[in-house]
Length: 110
Image (cartoon, one colour):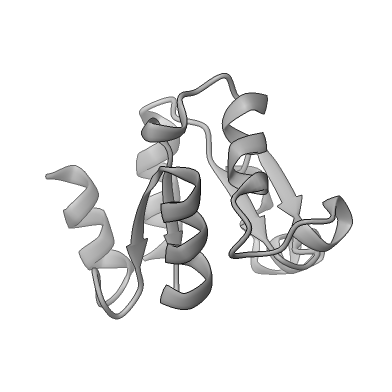
């Protein structure tokens, strides 16, 4: 369901960004997902890893969106949600807020 979620967001014209502590571009290409993203940010390259809020703040600035408009989707409360809260954006956590990407798509559509 990952591609369906990404396609649904792309159709709406919303920017999609990967925010990872580590380099992710080669993984995205191998999974056939690179084309869906408008940017890939690696914390280790930029000097900020989660839960530091600076990278989310930079992403919002780079895409000229208010940080309150950013939705960070992650899988770890202690890293992803902590970073989102510190930056002032919203966050959904896999296995807590949604069980799989089909249910995430339903959540995003409602």
